[in-house]
Figure 1: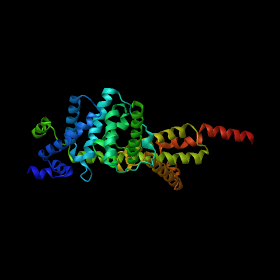
Figure 2 (figure 1 turned 180 degrees about the horizontal axis):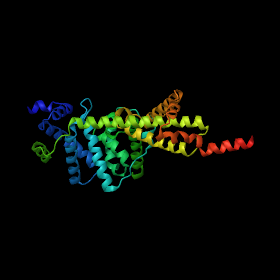
Figure 3 (figure 1 turned 30 degrees about the horizontal axis):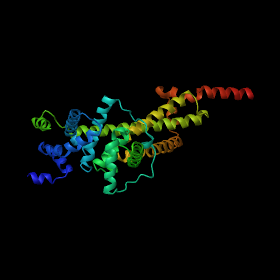
Figure 4 (figure 1 turned 45 degrees about the horizontal axis):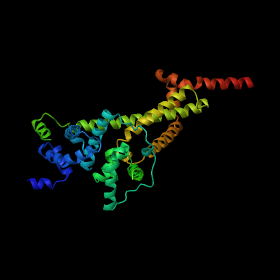
Length: 187
Length: 149
């Protein structure tokens, strides 16, 4: 039983939950608890706050599970809920800036197609991110975390943050340049 | 986290029914359509005003133009909830809305929609249609013309 349910995709489990079964939701909690905690740690430092927010994310995802479109990816959907919760938490705590109008989202970018990175490049990028993440603007921080630590594609990040796919690419590129300049400055 | 599962099993937390989300989607679509209709009405009325008074600037067209900008921003906000819109830069959907606004505005004027409404003499909007005739800028232009003659 345990083995067969482990083989189910997130979307298949979500379908069972939509049909009224509570038990399969536990599997989704198990699969995403660690991922969302890691994601939350990139924004907040207090573990208790993170845990409370993640509880709220799971409750909201259960309450709204019938709004989940089974033809799409469950991971993007639950990360979208988590993103909203963490952004709200950050605004309450830090009064971080609100981006009502951002040219990155408004204009097209032609130099930001997703290209596969070699493992060594990814490893180097991750090290840079771990060193300088707190110094980077939140709009760059989030795309970096989702791309390098959660291994999501540009399209999935676009679905989570509700920003154009080309904007995801351009933000990753700019964030890497910013981090490289920090690296030169501090070494 | 065991807390959550226990709460769910106890039935303290309930799922929202599917009709709740369907209703929300329908309302969202209706609101988008209604806002688009308002934009088209305002755009076509501005063109009608221009044709009637010969001037674009004046108190009424200015207010309508501002209203149109507000409604375009609202439409952008509403359509950017859909993947087909937010995956592309905002400028694309904005260009589509503006192109639609101009094309439909011209088409509506081509079929004399506003003239037909004006002829009905509806009490609520009569003043609205009389405005181009009473426009203060147009009045000044007319007075100057007469003086020159």
